Image 1 (cartoon, rainbow, N blue to C red):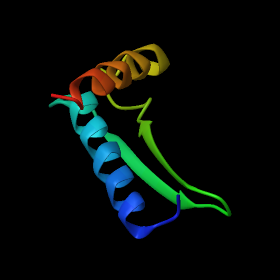
Image 2: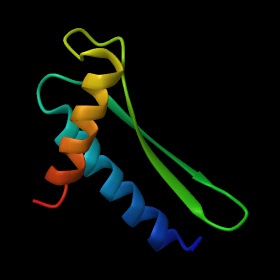
Image 3: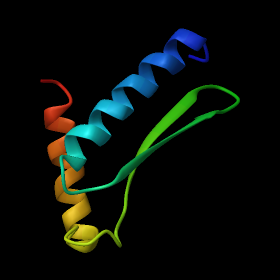
Length: 71
């Protein structure tokens, strides 16, 4: 689970989710960390971005991003 190829694929997927979630209106960042047993990737929303809708808006956008990342 810690192979470089796995990390590259997780990073690619996280970036697709962030792009699909953000569209033209949001800013989403990705982060990746290699732990003792596995690599973890995350997509984080910007709650303070104008028009984001706060936590609920970021949640909505991230869920949309999960759907859109497979297109």
